[in-house]
Image 1 (cartoon, one colour):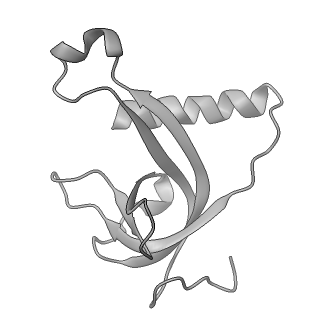
Image 2: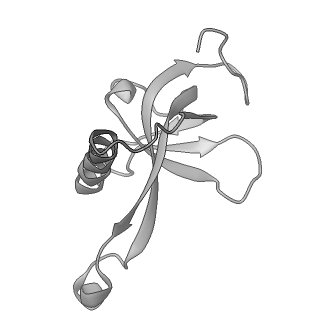
Length: 118
């Protein structure tokens, strides 16, 4: 997952350097999950929509405990993980990754809660 995060970070930096329009940050609420050694950091999104979880990255999440209810703000980006040409040699199949690069977070107490001082 780290090489995906690095690639997506480089994409965002290149976009800003090349003059791409600034994309507003998106917001999500849910329960932070990051069981050491078991799963990559992700957010169990509040509600009953089609997407239940989204991968998270970002320094702002350092020290956040597994199971903490949070509001996060950041950029949602995508990247292709793996290569269709070498899929048979990979432990994981080629897939699209959707990652929120969190720039801010606030601990909340209930679903869909948005802090006033965002």
